[in-house]
Image 1 (cartoon, rainbow over the protein chains, first blue to last red):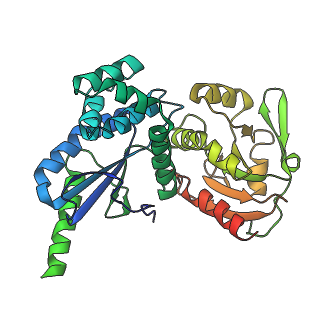
Image 2 (tube, each protein chain N blue to C red; image 1 turned 90 degrees about the vertical axis):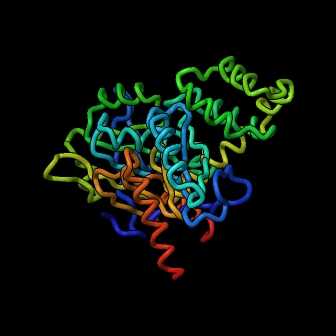
Length: 181
Length: 154
């Protein structure tokens, strides 16, 4: 059974309640069409589960098949330097087919980022290294394709489409509530 | 499958229409042998594409990756170009499956290789092996752990 390595830390991009009973980690590729389809599914899950869910996104760009994926991932990391990781993450997934350099610059501008700073960060090693570190952690965790999901540190090999993942996560919440009572 | 600690048998197979690779020539390097059922089938494609992204991790560990299936060298050529692969695919084509049989990973029912991994050390001894369910991409964590463990035992 593949386990998440390393575990989620404060360095991760986290949405939702950090103390939630259920933690969902996605290893994703911004250019991957499956990840694009998973994007609204996750949004729906987050809405339904509210404070019961902590969601974490880690980069897993398959650069040989998706030539713009690593650059897009670096752009989201560079946006994080100005506190806009999730905004950039969302805008990229919503415009998956337009991910060249100019497109990414345009998204950054539309988010009101300081463009001089963004361009500097985008071209620095720091943020592309971060993407590579995520990728390596995914390999070590046994990610074998994208999107790769981990629930409370364990690899989720089920179906994520429709409501399967939601139901699985909800069952985890119930299981934990039982333990506490 | 061959047992851990056994010497991996030598072989020579076509990797391109006019070039062969002999296992013994890779002495001094660690070798990852990835046997897989077929070019073009969805899971293998994902598995090989994944490994293709991590060659630098393997190279850092002095390891070379080799894919092996019973597909012909011309099929490998097309598949490799299509997926932009940067590592050799060997053709266990004639006599069909001879090397896979030698390594205990030939599936008589389908006439294809099983989905199996071996990690060999610098001297060509088996240090790790794994047989995956045929429909499951085994990922790379097992290979990475095996390479790390070899470092720690040096």
